[in-house]
Image (cartoon, rainbow, N blue to C red; front, side):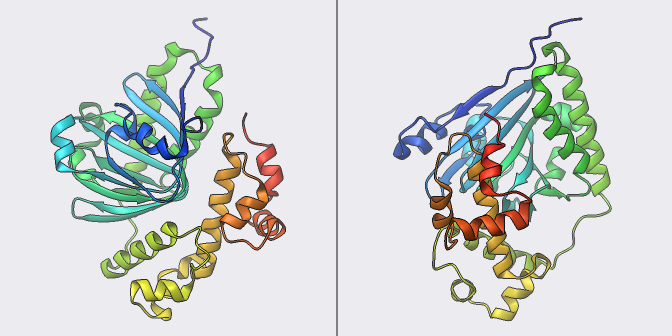
Length: 317
């Protein structure tokens, strides 16, 4: 029947490191950690944890982390010569940035593809994500030139099969023989190809000036998510736009205030699901701009169908 020990991920967390030293310790990690690929600047206090797998040469990392700016510079590219297709699936949170000349925004449920041999700059909110590193020859055998995929965002609907498979894979690792890792790698690559093909005719179209302003607005929101001064008025001042323009940027999200509230609720949920985070629910509420724990609980239940206490109680140990 083969090896039934299950596939054991390699776990990493900064929770046991002094807060002032966490970012430096993470940044010093070598490949295949994502830390080895980018110059990183934390946005607020830094914390991250990950479960890492190697599936027949494809690196897979399930991670949770605080907000940060990531830059893949020409100097770093020349120095490390790492040659992969990067795949980032967001489970919660947002990313935005510039890959070459392509400006992008990525939201929960969507996939970002990037050629690690080209420059990219991106800002990531407090987020949960899955990152894959696929060797260039393997990726190009199925998808064609990796350079053409740099900065491509695959929408939520087109990414759904890939998303669901990765979520279930994490839950089932203990049941899967290490000898089946090549089959898992093949399935992941096949589902990614399906997602790329599905997205070919349905790429989101957003006017470039508005896309750039929306990315800046989201960046301001995520950089100031814990600030009590974050408001429509403060955003208008920082971005030098009118209220009507700002509201138009967030029409699909139900308005600016709704977007800010949902970002804060998402950040609260990520904190509650983090087994290393023992912060009191009241403290989370205060940190993220809710009036008290009851206020957070009411909005949290309306958005996620459970209370913060139930969310924390149901997390994996």
